[in-house]
Length: 114
Length: 107
Image 1 (cartoon, one colour):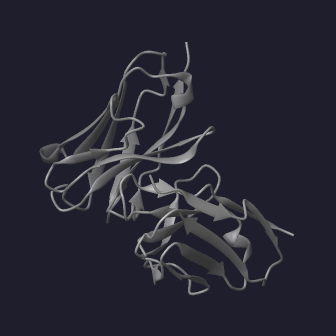
Image 2 (tube, rainbow over the protein chains, first blue to last red):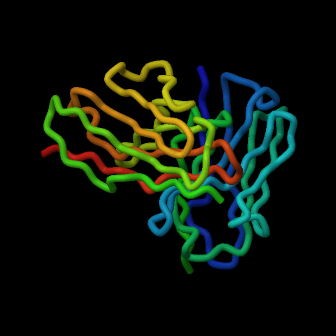
């Protein structure tokens, strides 16, 4: 069945770079959009960006200058990297599948703090 | 960016009630709206996509409707397991945008 699971560092220092991996099973990354969404106390649910089945990407301009989404289809993994972290980036980060965000991972809590 | 104005922010209902949540988009979103349920500590779960299509496993007491800028989501015969927060999402125009959420509580 379709499964998505995020793994990440938990705690990141301000100004540092966040790296999260979404490992999927039950489908091929070359057939579906994969998206990143975060949920923060300050802004609620925010769409961050996606990587299309063909590999092209789109980003929310709120993050565009510091966000990168990529994938390794051989490992069934999608990656989020965001630099210049601030305390306001503290929240839960989710990967999700499909243009309408049908399937979601369990999320990974990220705390930005020194 | 398209703004999604979701109301009400909170809702109190008795078991068996019908409740309705609305989302108004700042422009026409061509029915590309989905609705999600989120329980504390859990990821959102998609219930409805493309305005009114129930996702597999969504009970029939959930429904959605609307067009243009105005959309609604209803739960008929509220059950205890429906106590959660609900969110709309427009996926017509980039960036996708979410409503602010509605917290459904038991009266």
